Length: 330
Image 1 (tube, rainbow, N blue to C red):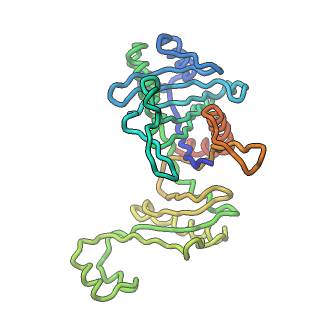
Image 2: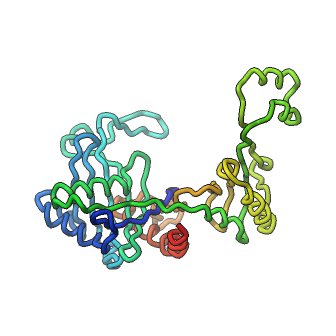
Image 3: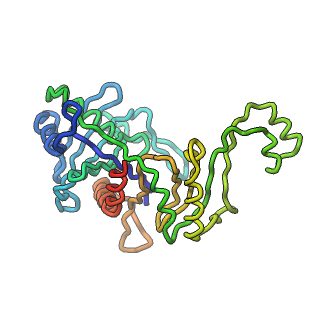
């Protein structure tokens, strides 16, 4: 399993700074039809396109229309985008021997480019984009940025653009109030420390406190936790009581509070009372089990792409009501 983070956005089609009809798919089709000299038919109902960018390296776009020999539903569009990376600065390293080698064999480096990729799932009905990307991979924002250049320079529509918007919320922390949740850790920052004497009951000697007086200290971070690998509590009533009490704080103190734990079957995650961009944890299978259940092999690129779509679509389907609620709360 590969642990990934699902990022969620809304988008708007703007004309003269006013929202207009959602023509996202129509505009994508226009891109592939207008720039046919740069479009590649990749087979298996995939089309490829390259946005040239001398400064950052080109951005590739693969419009994937079919998953496991079935067409993706009309309400969705699925893309793999990649940013060109410098081959000379990349290596692969053998885990056991720690020996390094070029990522692409030197004999064929003139034939291939190195890219780091991101997967995008677009809900055309709700104007929502979700993405899963790795380190140094391009984001949905990079894709929209290049797309807007095409709209302005190639379509000569300087009054039109696509706006990508983060979905901010302070309500994800409420997930911990449900049964089956675990509260692992709570931390906050204590601002405007009145004096170093405030720390005298926290294990420091008189000499140590005296040495700290020489420093310019105005805040202290407080971390509340149990013994290693032991949660503060698994009691949902106690968790709700703590969160409701902490929610009554205000200002900088409220914004500094961080709560770490698990809700339901999800992996451990940190939430804040302050509004933060909406994200979810997601796991994507990277191996295929062989006939012998104890044996497995790494997925091919196509197999991983199929799995990425299926896991993203499933995660989005289970969360889309919450996502819509967070959008309407803005």
